[in-house]
Length: 310
Image (cartoon, rainbow, N blue to C red):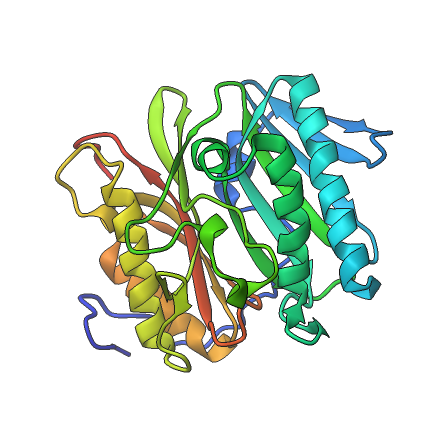
């Protein structure tokens, strides 16, 4: 089966796409392969830590988040992120990528307030204390994603390093912390990407990217157009950081695709494979995206070295 704009044949055999579980992409597991694990208690939250210097993966959970009120959820998220800040300071690590797995992410909690908005309110308060606002967020906030899961718990998964990273924004999009109140009482806080060094290589950690221009969703109900817009956003972020002449999507080494509808998986995956390098590793999972009208979200990892061979 082929689609407009494809330069390659896509696989036409139907397959089931697994529902998203609170677990990061494969490249994170490979980065930490052979590391040591420990559990940190008493902050007052517990954290699971995997360490392989100079990196750490720190995982925390808010049990039963799906049953909390909006105010309770916001308070718990603020406290959890504040505890994460304390732990990272103790471990002398800096966050470079965060995955947030939120049960019922687009479910309404109050008039005009869904669960993602309640989560954002809590995260913003913690980040305002952590880094300050405006210039502090611009200089320090890591890239992130927030997607829906079916379980009852909210999971925060943080990748951190000793040297930290450099946040990167997208000229096609409004900085997330400057979103208007249309998207909640307090805005989301994440960079569109983070440049970090892996074993001497400059890498770009691309955050969850959807069909948003400025702060507005585009192409409601049209998954193909949404995918094209999301890829244009990824291209813009990679182009701001890459050293060489290669097409931005050709620099991606890994991509994870979140689709709301299983029937869209083949088309979305085929489109990104057609634009990326032949060695691009793609994982597609079934998950709710952070706005009702959005049908697809894409994140990834890019190798920014000039002229690198893929």
